[in-house]
Amino acid sequence: MQTGDGGPVREPVPVVLAGARGHGRWHLNNLRGLAEAGRVQLVGVCELRPLDAAELDGFEAGGLVQSADFGELLDRTGARIAIICTPIPTHTELALVAAERGVHLLLEKPPAPSYTEYERMAAGVAEAGIACQIGFQSLGSHAVSHIRDLVRDGAIGEALGIGAAGAWARDEAYYRRAPWAGRRRLADAGGTGRTVDVVDGVLTNPLAHAVATSLALDGATGGDDLTTIRTELYRANDIEADDTSYVELTTRTGSRVTVAATLCAELPDEPYVIVHGSRGRITFWYKQDRVLVQRAGHGPQETVHGRTDLLANLVEHLATDGETPLLVPPAATGAFMRVVEAIRRAPDPLALPADAWSEMPADRPGAVRRVVHGADGLVAASADGLTGFAGLGASWARSGVEASS
View 1 (cartoon, rainbow, N blue to C red):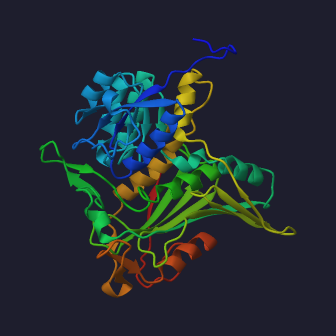
View 2: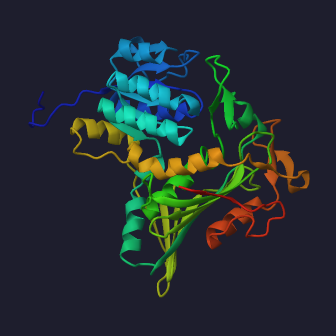
View 3: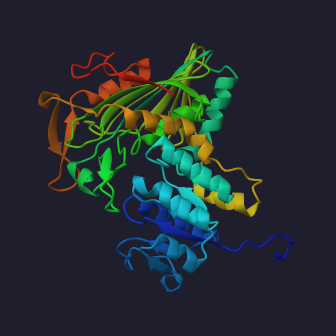
C-alpha cells in the first residue's frame, strides 16, 4: 500500500505480551504509547489470571485474546511479535515456542538462567530465522555510543577500567511476590522432581543493567570476550540468592570491569557506570541517559541523550527487512550470560552477620526492609577504585571466587 506522497503504509504489528503484571506493567504502558502511534497492536495477553478492564485501559478489549497457554495464544492471534516477561526459568522454553511458530521476540533480561539454556535459546532462534531482541533497555541509550566515541578519541586519556555502582532498596515483600523471587534454584513446576535454575540475584536481575551496560561501554559483549570472573556474593535478607554483591571481570583485551550492587541501601539512588581514564572520567547514569565528563584542563560537561525503545527498534528492524539492525540481539549478551553462569556456579551467597544489617520502615505502609550498614558508601567506593568489598575492608567480606570464562 502507498500513501498519497508515495511512502509505504505500515500496518500496526500484532503483538502478544506474556507476563503482564509485575515488570510486565512497564511493557503494557510502553505498548499503549506505540499503539497510539500506530506502530503496534496488542492482540493477546498470556497470564495465569486474566487482566481486568482497568489493567487493559487504553486497549481495544474486543479484539484482544487472553489465555494461559502461550502457544495457543500465538496460534489464535497470528501475532508477529511476542514479548516474554515471565519468570526467569521459563524464558528459554517460551522463546522456543515462539520460534517454532516464526514469531519474533522481545525477551526480557536475563535471557536465560544458565549459559547452556542461553545457547539453546539462541540456537533455536537462529534456526527459526526470527529476530530476537534482549530487553536491556539501557543499551538503547544514545549515550552508549557517545561515551564509546569519547573514549576512542582519547577525551579522558588512556582507558584504565570501568566501575559500576547500584544502590537500591527492596522490602521483604519483594521476595514474597512470586515463588521464584530471591531464589537460586526451584523445584520444577512440571512435577519431575528435578530442580531448575533461577539465579534471581542483584547482579543478574534487578541491577543486571549495570553489568550489561558496563560490558557494552567496554565493547566486551560476546560470549568469548571475558577471561576471568571473580565474584563476592552476600545476602542480608532471608533468601537463597544474593542481594549485596560484587563482580570483577577481565576481558580478552586486558580491560578491567567491576560492578558493585546492593538492594539493601540506606538511601537508594540512581545506578551509574564510571569509565576511568588517565586524564579524567566519564560517569553515566544509565536510567536517566545522563553523562558527566570530567577531565584535566576542562570544566565538567554534562549532557542528556535520547533513547531508542527496544520494541520500536524491533518493529523497525522487521519493517526494513533487517536493514535497521537490532540493538541487543542474543549475541550481544553473551558476556553478560557468562557472568550469570559464574554466579550460578559460585558457592551460595554468604549470609551477613546480624550486626551487619538492621531493619527500617519501607515505603509501603507496614513494610520493612533490611539495610546493610555502610553499603551505600562501599558500592560508591567500589566504582571509584575498581575494588571489591573485601579489598575495601568490609568486616563481613570474604575473598572472592574466581572463574575462568
